Length: 114
Image (cartoon, rainbow, N blue to C red):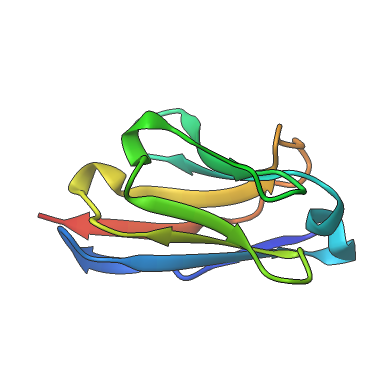
């Protein structure tokens, strides 16, 4: 299974980005999916996840700023990130929730400049 994340970039403090993620073999269509991130010098952490029925769960540090969603087919998952802060800088990954160790992709870099 191959996971591909996209949409990262460089933004100013307070800016927005929208990340996208798909998986081969329609793996996301049949499973809960999470967005994770690894900040500089930090462990990878869960940012948000979404169930098959589109119930969502957010880490406290992104509540009210980030929104996770699925497309109608269910195999593309998005992360809308608003009001970005410098501490949101990192590599963002998607995977199942809980994660499958063989499904980590390359991630997409998000850099927020203050």
